[in-house]
Length: 286
Image (cartoon, rainbow, N blue to C red; front, side, top):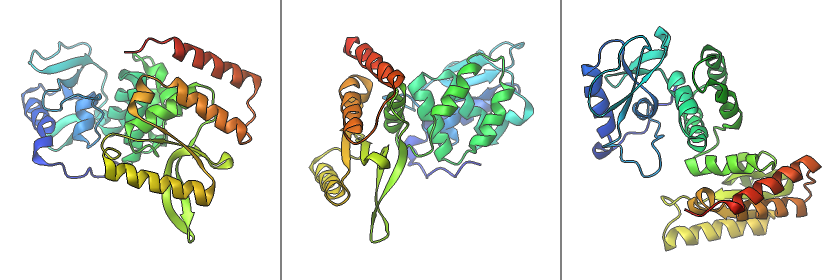
């Protein structure tokens, strides 16, 4: 069951209101789906830079029936059993588990993992999701669901943390733990975004919302200095620019740090890492 979403200010509820109005106009066999349904459930999986006030609302309709001919909506044919349909905030939409899995199979890969992370963090049961995957066998993009489930982690607070973790795993590096507690006086004082306690190596994603400006930078510097000094952690800091456009340098730095601190990659891991880095370096900048 989803944790109730935090209350949104009136100027950020436009998508829910538009979905509610559209839901009233739609035939009974058509429901709000995908990113729009996620928003109504309190999970923001809109792409970076998208405006919720103008986002086209996705709807799902039975394959044997015509799509609704309404403006500002994006129809997709889908088989929807009765228990995959729900009502929330006055909107008829796909149930939370179905919404999460539809986002996982239709969104671009990095966004798909981030979306599933956010649903898991909101309280969806991963076991229930795994059971529902079987019901989508044979549906478009259903085969990718097991991979997205394998990559997902409820410990990601921001989408950027999800993207960072996927890059790390794609490179053949060990899977990092998430939300690692750093103790002081027998209680957690700080939490590291992700990392490897065995090697005292962490990666932190600095999103623009919480890490911009002198006050935020000073706070981050003080926190990380304390963690390095008192607990011996090496902390690699990445930003959206690093993750989306130039991931090779941080992956190389992470691999080097891990090996200096005791990680011994297998030949296959080392080959995968070298191949990944070579491909990323050849990628043209945006």
